Structure formats: C-alpha cells, structure tokens
Image (cartoon, rainbow, N blue to C red):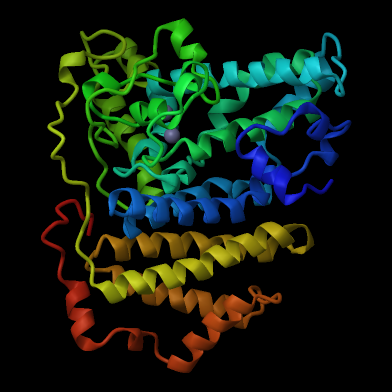
Length: 446
Ligand SMILES: [Zn+2]
Ligand SMILES: [Zn+2]
C-alpha cells in the first residue's frame, strides 16, 4: 500500500492516526522506515541550517556523521537477506499461541498497541543498559560523542536479536499488521529527538520523550547514567523511577569512549571485552555475572556497579577527532554518497535480484564502510585498504553485479576507470601524509 509524502512525514512524529495507519494484513503495511530515508536527509540538512543560524556552529562532524550513517546502513543489511526476527517471532507466537484476536480496524487496538510497543521498548531499553550482554549490542547507539540527527541513525545490527522477545506478549492478542505499524512508528519517532537545536517543548515534556530528555540518556555525566529509557513516552521513566531532567551541560558518548569510526569494530569491541573478562573472572557465578549483570559490575560490587566509579566529567572533554586533510574528507564524503546510493538502490530492488548479487553488494558495502572508517581515523594502512576496496568495487562492477540504472554508480565507475591506476587518487605527498599516524590518534589499531 502506498503512502503520501505528508503521511510519511507525519509517521516520523507518530501523528498518523488509526484511520490512516490500520491494515488488515501484514503485506499491506508500508515500509515506513525505508520510505523515510529522503526525510532523514532533509531533516539533517535542516538541522545544519538551524544550528548555523542559531548558534553559528555546525551540529556535527564529517567523521562522526559518516560513522553514524555507516552503522545505520549496517544495522539494516540483515533485512536484505532475512525477514525481521521481530516480525518472524511475533507471527510464530500469533499463529500458535494466540489467546484471542483484537479487531485490526478498531481505534482501541491501535492505541493499546501504541502503549504496548512503547512499554515493551522501555523495558527492552532499560535491560539493554543493565545486562552486559545486551549492552554489548546496544552500546553502539551511544558511541557517538556528538548529538545530532546522524546519531539517531547510529543503530546496532545486533540489537534486533535481543529486542524481539520483549514484544511477544502482545502476539497473544494483537494482530501482526497492527504491531508492525507501531514497531516502525516507535523507531521513527526517536529520530527527531536526537538534536540540540530544540531546547524544550513546554508541557509536552511531561508526557513525551523529547530532545531534552533523550540528551540526558546519551550523556556520560554521572547524573545521566541509566536514565530516560523511554521511546515515545517519558511516563514510563517517571513511573519506574528512572527519570532525570536535563541539568548540567551534557557530555555525550560512552563513559569509556571507543575512539573509533570503524563500524564493525564499534559494534564488536564490547563482545571482545566481555569474552576477556568472562575468562578472567574467578568461578562460575562470577563468570555468569559478567554476562548478566551490568556493564559496570565487578566481583564484590552491586549489580549495576559502583556509582563512584563512573568517570567524572568537566565539560571540557575533547571528542575523538583525528586530523585528516580536507581533500580526504571530500573524498570520503563523495565515495560514501556512492555507497549510500548503492544501498538505497539495493533496498528498492532487492526483490528482483539474485542472492549472489545481493551478497556481493553487501560485501562491497561492508568493505567500503570499513575503509571509510580507516580513512577517517587516518590509519597508516588506510590507503592499502582503500586500494583493495576500489579493486573489489571495480571487479564486482565489471562482472555486472552493480549495474542496474544507477546513474551515480556509473558516474563513480567512470571516475575510477578514467584514472586507470587507483593510487593516482593520491599524490606521493598525500600517500606520505596518509602513512603518518595522526598525533591525535592514540588508539589506532594498526
Ligand atoms: Zn540507550
Ligand atoms: Zn538515542
């Protein structure tokens, strides 16, 4: 079923009433998230303009923005190969264990599902912060040290495998077609709240999750830790005692920053950390606690760790920001745009493509996003990875796996082709620059 641009826009703010967003079957439910991509881009541009006019500063950085968008793309790649685990598990319970069936076209069902999905999200989100193994999946959303609309798109690709179970009680009585709408609306609502350009929205702050409340959630100041888990409504935090109003200047990011722009590493590093602490912990009970207690837990400490161990903030923290030549930023932005186009085209045409084509395109996307991360970190071996990436891109293109009326891709290919040798992107001086680790980058793996 099609949606108008106006409906799509309103879906981003959860103001598409039951009459416009109730469907008999799951197949009729629009892919609101995919159709929001142009709006995401438009709002990001708008945020840049407003921030510049309001505060004479940009709301974000190229490296952090590319990193957030890369993680957003990675998080959606499994959808190209498999049906969402949230939906599959929900349908299974609905088909096998349904107790009764609420009418799909009733307003009551719509509003009850709105509350149910948001309530489930609150607990999923809270447990994702309080249980180490779930935190490993979720933490990537908190790894940006900026707070802007890019951060909203910085999503985890592991989180879907931990969130599905929280929705299953609704499958006992709420039709999948209603659930599938609210699952998307709940996610989309959380886009606009990731901004600093809106200070507060008056009395609605009492009920709704807002930019101010969610800024606190993204803070690493001790007063912000484990607060404001709500998705659309903030009432759950007020009821269950996890609410905190915005106060001192919020410093964003993790209490122990990862200092990387490489998406796979940002996602998987905490799992490596859990693996190491699991084997280092003495005794079976301690090993279990490493997995199931809070990320701040240690032997002899309370379940969620000791508050006094949360690093204090001064407000003068400097975000991870390796210096990169301006031409390299331009290079990364242009090539990222090409990969973004490849991804958007893949989303739109996936049903008509062979498994082989889909897999090869996914490989190109993952390799490219990793290489951009290396470039943004100015790692010494970034240029080697970029040359490999360009070779793979060209090889896959030459074999015909990237061609289907992609004007931008064709354009990029012509660009590559006319240069013949990939290294020609970089002068000798540039290569030397790339080979010198940045003074600001102390955490480079290579
Ligand atoms: Zn969170
Ligand atoms: Zn967030």
